[in-house]
Image (tube, rainbow over all chains, first blue to last red; front, side):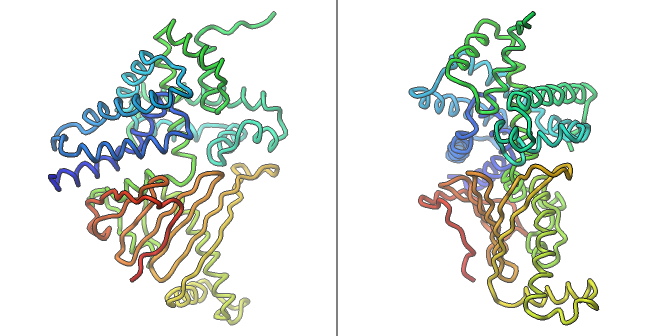
Length: 175
Length: 238
């Protein structure tokens, strides 16, 4: 085993954790399964460290392995819960690989867009993501019906998405 | 008149349900069918899921990703060593972890004041100035005693009453060493700084990472398979 190569790959694995997690998510892996699958991804990349050529694009190399790994994982889960056609998942994988190359720009755009949210909308997003509450719990917390919370979150995310696209079109720089 | 959602709008709704963990088997089958009949919609699906992933990372629990980034960061990035954290508190973690440290920094100040008060070093609270309090806290923390702080944060984004988002953090310190246990709902993480100045952290229930050498020289670390590591933690013995 080439120790230097292994060190380099581990460093790159660490650097790409966001991308790897995002990739799994884009293939419709449920949130509860993402941590497990990320562990498997990290392990398989590490094991294949010798196949990586230093100086080449790590994401281009890793995304192929990860794609295979995630689809395999989904296939295994499929006995219980796979509902999405493999062709669809493959298509999502191709699009995700491409979009994840701009992840840092997307993150910077999101930071900007979050700052633009009016306080009540920011509160809802915080309850959902910072507190990790379900729609029902949020409804109870703020005294609104779950349907209303669901609708509000849907609109906020749509607004954030539109804002991110605008920022990307303006050429936002990674923060 | 009832508004009939377009296939595009319906797909967005179903993905939103998936994101919020509310997608039923029937809905999933419908989503599958929608994506099959119009492959162009796959792009917006990815956009929605990427946004969700980023929101979880940016706003969610203290980001392990950021900590891993720190471990693997090039020295040229200008990040100080974690030993500096413990001794001076002047330290810039990457994004997610920086937020944690901002929170913990506040907690540490409160805890330090409380400790100083409890051990009787704060002789006269009415006359104590900031320097006295900090000095007392530093002296107290220099003692070879392990301390555990249990911190519960009730965070309000807007200052409005009516909702809470509790997050429990347990911080154990001994000199410059520490470990942090973070709990939020069902999720639990541990990370810490060992006697050699190396950060370790759990990467899920069965694996942890440890730098191969102190972070002052952090260029690499290895992933160590550690079966049975579930929820275990600690400070390495000196």
